[in-house]
Length: 347
Image 1 (tube, helix red, strand yellow):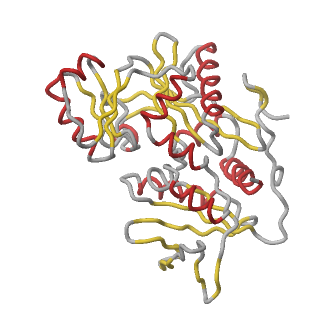
Image 2 (cartoon, one colour):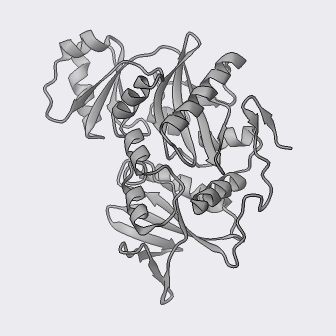
């Protein structure tokens, strides 16, 4: 039997349990990089995925996307990708893929662009679909929709490039302190915590350097947690949340990636609040029609979880949060990654 949780039994993963038997290795493209500031973080995630997917079952090739172009990485060699059919020529032979394992954080892997491309090619992929990815990537649109569906989110405003800015009206509507960040960005690039009106315009300008819209959110004072979730064979598994304790004023880039925070799994919450966070995560997953692996961020204020954002391509490096939560649940990364991949192949 699998490990028991408050949300039922974790699936029992054994070698080949979910694996469709193929007469030859399944060819998998692991996509990394992208056009955002998160490209290097994505490459770390891709490295972890490449290490943990079983090579006796899969023929893996890393496809790196950057402003320079799309290239298959083979040792020191960079082989151009033919975007007409997503193929590469290796040793004079055309190499095509059975599925794409997308680990690009930010555009074009998290905002629906790659998903639309692969849909046209009829190539399976491991993430949510076009609409869900595009919607979740825009924090204001996503949180507005989820608020209307009963999910608690903080009060917010949106400012687009070229919009007039009234610091006075923003201050009256949102109050202090407030967070100003890109509505369509990630990894805490361009995020400011604003405590007075004089800081608002500069914070909006900073956010717009990293995205097309600036999201202005009311500050929710409480404990920050994040909860991983994934589905296999129609069964949604919600992991135990992780508590984020930062040395900085908020969970910014340095706190995330420069060791200036502690990530405590499981979070130091009561059983009641833990179950509420996990139930809300499952409900967000259902409402948005998410697929594959995802992570939902919250602030817990007076035992009430306020959703902050949804990550449809969460970090997957060995040190990332979702892998930490999987290990706590007794799930090896090799079985997690291969199970999610097999689920995509079935779709």
